[in-house]
Length: 431
Image (cartoon, rainbow, N blue to C red; front, side, top):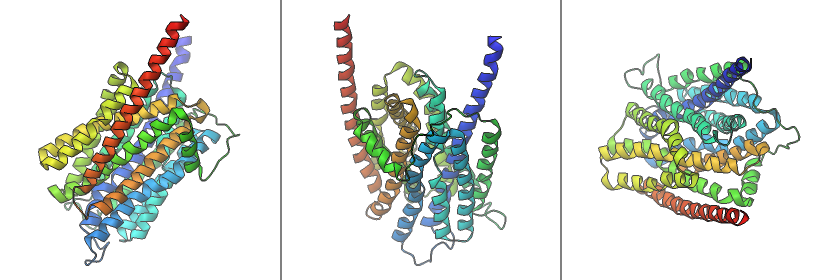
């Protein structure tokens, strides 16, 4: 009888995980498809988006602004939506995110069709302001997890991000190749095709997803909660340094990732199809790391050691790309970066979650998402101003930033080690 009762519960749990996985997947796919489309569209001026006389520097600045708009709007909206999910539950907030993604993709596609930078920006603003699916899904997974399964479940859900990033560039690259560009297909086609995905996931959430957290109506909402929550998170001793390391790491990583398409276009002359292959290649290794490598490592290695194993190799790998400027070194280092990067993110999220009370899990995930968004928004703007000076300068700055993050991680890990040793000594004395 007990077994029969547990079976439906297990099925509901699987449906919940599938729903959350698909929610993040469609968000990531819609985001990732812009890279193989917008890079040639803005930098090579493949359409009439710019006047032929527009300087390349101006195109880079506008390109950086378009890339930055989504995460900067996410920075403003994500913590508010995260707090909204703590107040009213995960399900209604996820539905809002999916609707925003749907309309944002359609408007962005319309902007590309009309050669209108302002409409493209509007589409990215709508997508960004409602892009809280990742932290809310993470909070929902945490609601369903134990301390032992938390890192594994966060890895599975975060892997949806990587899978979406694998499929998104394929949609963007394939449907924007010279072979298919015609009166039927255009640079806008991938946006319209991808818009079907959030619609289908919306229906799945409505009819199949069971609420994981009923909400706490006493929680007050604040439109400026991004800055307020980050401020309070920095005031808490246990979360201060991990949040700072997360911010440093993400700025360095996004300096690398956001500039990857532009760098490969300039140095190796990649077209939109090769750009999509590059991003898919990166995302496949990213997903392998999340699904296979990180769960295996975190079972055998402590969180602080996993943090060091993930962050220290990153500046070395980027430095190798700069120094050798060789296609085989490039592909090898990109794969290794994709493997080590997600472990840092997963480990720091696990640390932050472990240091936060249950009723504020959505909020701390919103804080981490806000920092993620802010770093993501800052990075392309920095690259847009650095690239005209020197092609590899964005990568060089990323090396400096990630080296700083590595040193801070060593400091944090040593501090944790000392605290653990002190706790063990106290336990020995008590015995």
